Image (cartoon, helix red, strand yellow):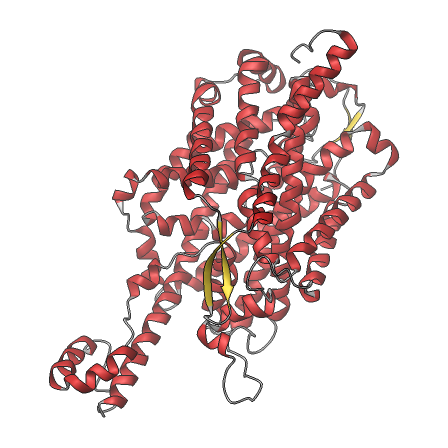
Length: 610
């Protein structure tokens, strides 16, 4: 569908941006909804939500998750969409329209989105890398490579696993610590350039090109998930994973961390505070029913998380059952050879009884063999919780390599990851580009294509940091600290500004004039009290957690042991963490202070609200 450029002649519902004569619009409301879904439904739905289900009692985690969706997710999503549609500007202009002192909120959103873009597209680069290798037979992560003498396998791979070796050594070529930066790895670097080239082509002409791409990035991942669901349910052991997921552990409802993680997942999954939702909504018709769209996007996003978990747990069940049965077979083979038992005599069903008999009948010999006998447990395999890149590039690849026609399933999986990642990147870049293109100073000198190109080029250049040997450690720093506290503060200020600075009754009147729908008590109660209190609680939790934790630590790869080890962050890494948090959060008070000083110097009085 073609994006139409329409005259903004109507005054009703048009905010301070009314001086603009034209503004691009979504071709249809459906295109806007798809853009929001493509942005909100991302990698976190696939690799974060299943992990939280696994950690917090399977089905019982859905209770706090749904509660947080109702009291936090939908209200805050509606608030951001309403602000964007009301002001019809990007995040900086939108909050300046609410109050001149709030421009820093928009600046903070742009800074956080810039940080996010620098590292988020690295995931797409890794997905491209795995996608290209998925056409090999056998898959390169399915077996360990031979050593230099070709007399055995490489020691690091033997101590770890073939999938871990391919990830840590072949993909990342990871250094032993963050202090050892190493060189840029040219293959991941080229994949990163390709990832940014794809993003640039998708955002080249703003919403005109983005509006066409979102149909693919929003819909195709569901097609792949459905295919994977059908395949997953037919895998041996899939039911073990699904039973584990849907068996609730009700005691987890009394665990405060379950509720905190549910609130955090809702908050970050919807992409609140980045400015992307405000940017998308600014291209709506003023009369668009953004309340209905907020509810639709919230429900689809959460339903996708649950749907993706069903797919993931069927894969979990297959992987856990495969590992469990492989473990049993190794024990059976060891005992059969050690005690000269008849082939086929020892089975999984009588293994424990035979072990007890051998221990009593041949105690000395059994004690020699005992250290080599592994303790095989299906439950422990299912309880092994992994999230993030570990789930996407190690656990899933471990399962895929054991499937029939593994190349096909690998291509489908990493193609889906790419679609999810690119869809989210469209929103991430929109949060940066919309305020820049709205700026008359910048847009008067540079066309939209040049602005988009410069933003992509700058992000790609900085992103090269993550393709170095220590890049994975810096990726974790940006992922863990660049947005968490900053976004909580941004959304808190947004909510308080609308309800208590601009005025909830005034905002209600604006919405009624704009859409024709009055606010009911639910939205008022959430915006005015429940949601801000919840954000403050999350903010306090994260601050106290950082304080209680003490020295911040990270997981480093030890090639000699073939496993991750915990190390303390060095001083320069701690300094970067502090700068990441401060550079965005300090925008809010500093811009407000600058506005106050400027106005008093010019006029001798403070600026009025709105």
